[in-house]
Image (tube, rainbow, N blue to C red):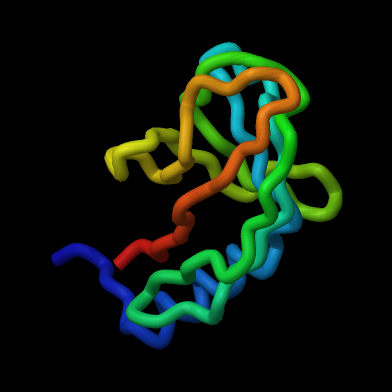
Length: 115
């Protein structure tokens, strides 16, 4: 039998992870940071914490967004994932082809604790 967590434990895990996050970085396939945004999360429900506030920001570099990482206040990675603009990635943004200075908007972000 696989280990499983109760919903309240999954909520606690998701909240603990997301409370560490200070910013979100969107990167290209070479791990070049294209844009950095401030982000906060709502308390988890059903084991998932959804972003409540994601600032828009101007890109600091140009490229094709393919991945993201969340960063804590000490600049350590909390978690990472894939980027897409059609809902198929772990993070959904308005445009994956980013030019330097372009305003970037994240459409949705969430973190789901393991079950």
